[in-house]
Length: 339
Image (cartoon, rainbow, N blue to C red; front, side, top):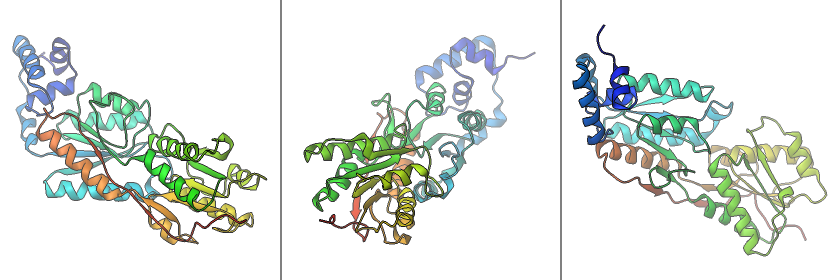
């Protein structure tokens, strides 16, 4: 029986995908690691399957969606960001592959399958969250990746593209403060989603600077976007000390809040002002139209693809961090509080 790639990987102290990438002279593998792998191959008499090496001239980038929550494919943020990635990749003659699954294990299995036959040169993750096993796998296998969102680890070694979400959350809250609101709430995703945690931090910072104590009872973190008015939202908006204004981390959540408010007889913006995020089609179709912070979704995708390709073709580059500007779009969902 001939020598296997697993035996080479074991002797070299690397993963099998690193051996495969060394065989195709992939630029993501350092010269030192390539030398170590080639020495192991020589020592064991391993001969790579040259029929696979013709694929090396075809470059491909994977686009990883979050584990398939029911709302993922309905959220325009992902669609617009993917559009930016594919537009840039098409210009550079890179193909793209969409990677998703119902669990982290399923996503990792797909990455493993694609990378072992050189069908994956790097990946862009359209999300960032704490303690992500997918990132653990990418780092272990030396697969280049870019985050759309801020990293919570190895900040000097991770390439990411993001908005300044702390400042954006602060600006959204300050907009409501400047209108005269003092009872301002925050609704967002679970804090494991770094973008929502940062926007909440900005919200707290704006309140603190205005001399308003932070009240945890004025904040709700939702595990997913409810299709109908959730009991938690109904109770929140029915309380005697309910907020007069809300900062909401996503336009879709804001639309659910609008629906719940109307069911409770609350008028927007007279009884409840709302500032949301993403400036998606939902913000324009809601009644009234939502004041929303535009995070430049498509530009986030373009920058992510640009950085990924740049690092694939120049593997010695230091990890870059790109901050994409945002801006607030004023519409009809905000007004001064009732006296």
